[in-house]
Image (cartoon, rainbow, N blue to C red):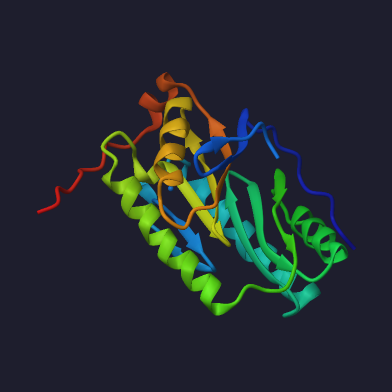
Amino acid sequence: MIKTPTSFTLRPLLLAAVLAGSLLPLSGCFPLAAGGALMTGLVSADRRSAGAQLEDQNIEIKANNQLRLNMGERAHINITSYNRQVLITGEVPSAQDQALAAQLVKSVDNVATVLNELAVMGNTTLTERSNDVITAGRIKAAIFDAQDLTSSAFKITIERGVVYLLGRVTPREAKRVTEVITAVPGVRKVVRALEVITEEELARIAPPAEPKKTKP
């Protein structure tokens, strides 16, 4: 039996899909997931509260358990939660599985919203996932090198060259990080599901700026 999720009110979200080089109307700690590989930073550097980070970790664990119990190994699915907004990426063999995965994730306690980006297709190959890992590394380096961006503001997942952006950021940061990522080789599209905050709010919640290392 699927339980009804607890209801939450989300801040305004900036949701858009961006092709490398062009903006479409609509179709990270710097955690960055690529084909299931995850790189995380310090809890203290995250713009979420410690409680929100813990809740997101619990949501990811519970959602993955639900998917494994109900769908087994027939699909390749990754779960990313940020402030109770849950992104589902990967591949499933049918539209029925696509809908089932979303239903299972929505049933997890404390999930506020679900962004279902599952593709109905065969699972990606090892080569495709390896390419995503390489692209993920390039993205991480590009954001770190950008003097006007804070890498801890973003939580990023990449699937088949499509980059998904989550985080609490200002419109300025959203625009700038999109410019940086779309210039990275291997990126086909950027999908933004960002919680928009003001510059004033950023000044109140942001941790101290990360020191930028200079290249020799």
